Length: 522
Ligand code: PFF
Image (cartoon, rainbow, N blue to C red; front, side, top):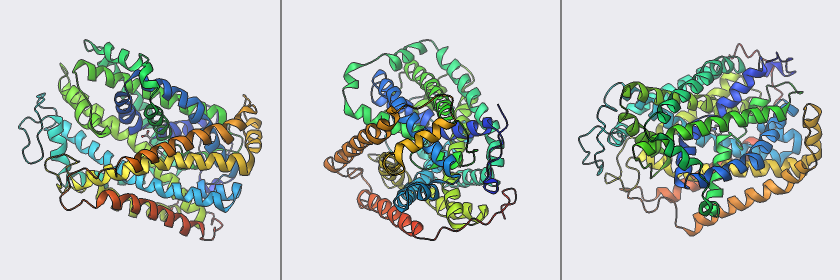
């Protein structure tokens, strides 16, 4: 692809080529969401009932919101909060810092999950996958003897070993980010093609298992009953935002390193199609395996990647360890390029706002981030019967994920559409996008971002809130010795701390960024 003309804000960093940007943005989008959450959502909502709403969500919400986020980045050459301040004023900055603060929580546990995946990767060479037995698992006090994946996973998270993996993932993330776009581009040039290669190996394996095609049929056979269920639509919209890395300022930061005249319709389509293509391929590979071995990934989304898939792999006729290692390596590299983008979104926001060096910005994110990731990896067993999550870390993760995942991204997207559509003006945005694009966005795009998307997002958010408030506090039925206060305390802590962070940061003066060379972060 073509070489890019340098961005005027060169001291912040700039992508060397369009290919570099597309790899980085698709590396952000393709992550745990594609490999694990899509398939488990699709399973939970009944296969064919899910992919159609999901497909609709791509065109109605996904691509338009990505066009908005890319444009916010290129119009201003700044990351989310400073960009919003420039475009729509202080209100915009409050909203942006709130979502950036939510991104911190999501990053913390996203990296813990990656740490577990890394520990399972190491396990694939040792005790994991040595015995395909599907022994009934009856709790953490009385683990069954067979080293099946469930036993292995709960045994693993109840040790301190994942702390090491969590530290390693944070270390790799910071290393990749150290010299900004230069090092990110170098990393994604290796990791993103590798992800595709590994996924293709897994899909070929899945489809050539006898009976694998039935799983694929289940995934793609439309199911009209499911389509009438509002939960399916809610699930599809939330999954679409997460999968495309929208609503948290990540794509704004990546686009801020593009030249002003980048074609954002083309970029958004490319990144979205690469992401969703990968997701469907992953879905096919996983559904094939679930059907062949009659596995049920019931329970949390994590159970699919950590129990059901390894269990399936353990049953492969040959190459069990190799495929197990492939799978967890794939999870780690796909997740790593997403974690990198989340941290970049936050660090670049601090750098642009406070005028600090890259090293300082990264440190300000890493220090609280690593403390949080460690907390989510705490191995103390608080529910030996496993009527909840077993360990303190997993319980914290489960509850924080419930709130942060279900609200932050969608609220972030809602703010963006309302502020950009109504305050900046949808016409202005459209004129900016159309100037540089081969295709033109018609006036329908105004209706889309001023009315259609805000109405859909408001309905989904209100519906989710209604479920949460009317159905009993999430997690309150879990057994947790001495920690029964967590389900109430965690959402309050999450909400208050994000509001306080947003207030404090918005009210700091915006410093002119002291020019520094990205290649010398000190
Ligand atoms: N899109 C990533 C995934 O599918 O795993 C997760 C993610 C990354 C979400 C960055 C949001 C974000 F800003």
